[in-house]
Image (cartoon, rainbow, N blue to C red; front, side, top):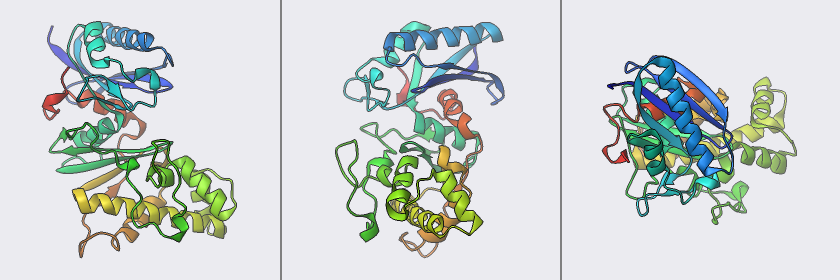
Length: 311
């Protein structure tokens, strides 16, 4: 049967989502189920069942791309660095290929987000797209000429576990990170990290959206100060990306991408940290919101998909 469909699966820690696209990008089907947490065999079986059900409903066969936490180890071919820890050490690509009786392509969920926005989203038409996830954690994916950049170690885009550039007195002491190091970008820019900093520095126990909302009202000086600190930290961190990668577009994803102040406040500050007399990189909101990850998984089989991603 000809592969008429592009099927994407987002294997998350709490939910597993499937989306089926036509070759032109039209959404034909979308379903979500709770992920069987802690049960690897059940996760593989669930994906197989969801794909087969989608194909039966639509009456056509599809290619399958999977967005996962973590990455496939170039050394072992097994999963590594997954916060869904029951996936670590497992031959997920091999098992899914057997379950679905076809090759599959796997990529990190941040890579899928970046690919979605590069193919037909906010970064469409740009040569280099850096897709950032700002949520309970911090990550990123890189797409160059429509292809996901995996890197020699399969860690391209692991931006959140680099040190925050140019730490000042307000950034000290360097916060410990679960990865075993201290001062990681994730420990300053994730949603929980921002809330912790607001409580520690301003005495306010607020979620990021509340901080931004109070700051926008102009009447809460503590929230304004917390937002200003966050904007400067994000500007420093993204300036490091621009200095190294020089992307055409940076797309923000994750829960914090819904905060309007980021899109004006960060570019207004990053010029002082970028090694250029002018910054042409655009900072934009995602076109597909929380659908980008699963859309990008489906697009792993488009013409620009990375040649080394087949398993």
